[in-house]
Image (cartoon, rainbow, N blue to C red; front, side):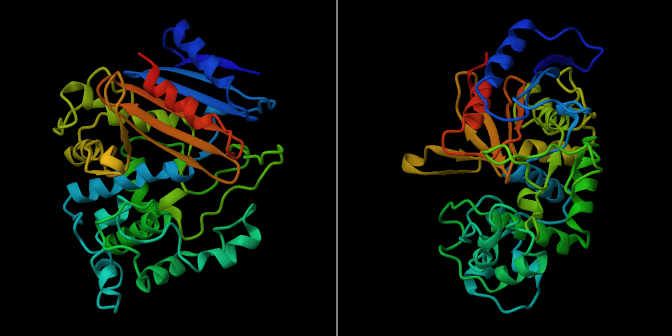
Length: 372
């Protein structure tokens, strides 16, 4: 069963061409529940579907697990704390997390910027993570590895490469960033994220823990078997965010609101133009943070063809740069992306575990890069 609507409900009917585009794209995704949400300068069209029966709560109003697509939220949090002068990108994580504690010289050199941009030299996950995770890999691999263990693993780490010299995707590093920011501010990560990102952007349906029964999307294995809600253990900053597709659009629209009014360097207060359907970005530190996370900061790969901002993958397209991040958990997938030059944003979710021939990310990415 499928449905395509314009949002908010008081707005004009969904653009027929956009509605058809989303419906065709959803037909290429195999999952019990699929939501494809597209915003053009704040005018939203949302398509819901899938091969499962819809429940009493509309799919676009259920909170979905974002997995690694949580990292842009962590990036925006860091950027805002920097804009407020509470931390610096070049602050050394070990000095904030455990002042005076003896660590390997390479660990001592790891900065907040290194942790967020996957250039810390840390592995994807701690070496001692796997023995406890493998026996429950398909049910609860992270729940048995709490925050204090993540911190201890960092303090005794031996980075593979000198910080700042190599790019290696690391859930471990971004998780350490979360614990470091909590230590530096004296505020638990969940509270810090709410104060600095979720509340200012009015993301009322975004959280880092499962909500009341009936408000959460249910993930599924490839065979259609439901899986329990993900427990990220001590890796909260790297993958614990849960959000409705509507809130995901609001998050993305905040990133495009100032870009179309003067480019990514528009950082002044009052970036409110017609593109912005959510909160007015009147706080200069929030506007500055949103601009900062759009700015390319590193290149990697053969001939340096892969570009990254602090927290987004950054690709070219016929319609200008696209910024995006995807994520997957044990039974769900999510995609967030936007084009800052044109005000186009795409949020997508699916409630089936990723597999080799999966079309979810490619389909969502195509909506972002191929839509005029």
